[in-house]
View: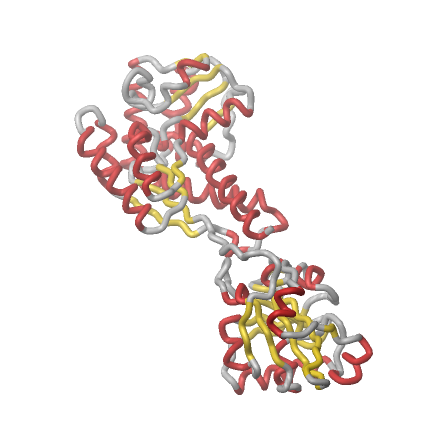
Length: 424
């Protein structure tokens, strides 16, 4: 029986050039139950709002029985008053026996395709929210005439195939279009730092949402702005004006391109954070600085004393560093002038040769000779890259806290929060 129903449905949809995908799922009765078992893009389970909920009923007009089907998203409730106003009569749900005898169907098996195919006289009312693009992949699912089979379809194609098709406002609550966060990353000092930040964001998202992870469609859209001019910041005092122009123009471009969350994969250019916030505020975009991410991390983990490794501009809390707030609330050990020169050399070495044995050895010597507290804040993306290449992160019991990784965690947390709000 199942094979006959799904085969007939496939032929019916193919003949009308409708895109669809029919596949198996474990036995499901309710919308919520079905949504948790649907198979889409290699993942079991879809958001409840991507499951189509269908009710078959009737009303009497001048003694004549008119059948109607009401369709909405699985997380929505039909508004009886709205429906009565639309129909001009009370909507009465078809009893189970009538459903079996007249429509050869059952509860949990009503879908618009089979109804339209076999009972073209039924009038179909679809809530207007069905046709709003919420979140990727922008498809919906419902049963394929059997409790163990589901069909995926594009809601915008329903009008092409459903007879007696109507769109109305059927539900109790106002629908707010779900907007997904778009990440904007500014990089270029070095470009690999942006790549590392993006990778760490994705790794964090994958770990944090666990069973809710839907594969690629769970990741954010990411806009990368990688500009060579970010390298000016290695000589920030000498090239402040050029660096400012490059950074602020790129931030504005990310905003214009649709980013809703912006971050810079660089510790030095956080210096322009105040000006960046002004631009982002104009576009209603959230800017997350490394400094605010780090302070939140330190407070959450009750870390009060640490070594702070960065180039001379990042460790200059009196002028160039955006981390100057740290000096007021924490016990900080900053490298000596001689060690700052070594840090600068390591940075340029990574820029020129990326990850090398020599660079790693120099980093180990630096950590051994230039740190005291056991808690080490890494505030230089070139060191972040070297550190990430090592399987064993600890060194003589030291604990490393990388600002690039901390920033990635903060961005991922904000993205997941928005994702949960959307998926419910």
